Image (cartoon, rainbow, N blue to C red; front, side):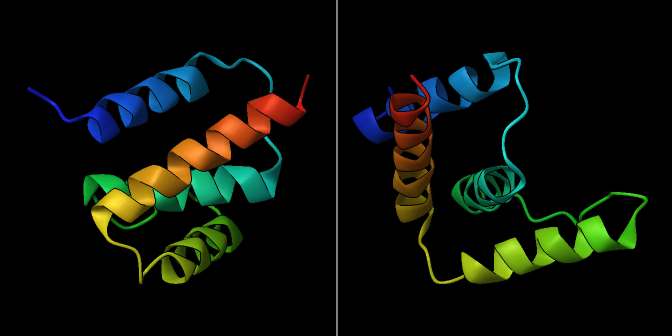
Length: 87
């Protein structure tokens, strides 16, 4: 059975995936980095535009000191605050 942090993280991921409006670029990059760190999924960024890959790489670099659990919590906090202040 998943722990409460994993459940809350999955709910936050579902909320982001269900959101239809575009996220601001800075929020999207943070979500990307926290998700990659939280899931320990570090494949190379695959955009055809080098500048986008550079931004993704930079976002991952900024999250490098986080543990998986810290990245999950950061993702949850970012999603919660984003939707809280968008109302």
